[in-house]
Image (cartoon, rainbow, N blue to C red; front, side, top):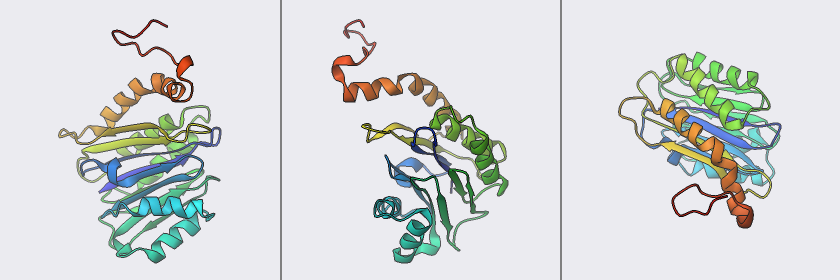
Length: 231
């Protein structure tokens, strides 16, 4: 019950994922990223253990295809699982088990991969990948992922209404944590991707300031709240 787009920014080496689902709180179970390592998703009838397992396989030196192969070989009930991963070189791989729900599949692209189940059509995945590949390489990774997700939604997205969405992206260099982690856990009106877009518009101008606050507090910008010293 999930549609996702994973990607790597060739310019910065950052990794990220944008995803949406009819289920609540989809990012909490399905989205995983590690700075300098890669990005992974575990979805469909989700086993949240498999996302970290994919990243661990990358850390052990496997490429994307070998990481998926290793996790699929070891995981129980793998026929119910849908997995996707992008590694440190931008290579991608995916697995859609035989028990994946509805119209389902995965599509690799240049530095990206899309995967989904209970889709309106497989054209959803193709639109997401095409959007990412055609995106401005100077644009922020989060923006390219969100545009890809929106392109898939425009072609029908999931067969039914979606209720949750998320945007997760790694940092780079000393910023070894996800510097973007935006979530819409449940929108009863079926508009979580639009709300995710609004959250990104709020977060983007401030994102790098929060990195500075972590790495160099004395040089950090003011918070802009009552009681905070003027810059």
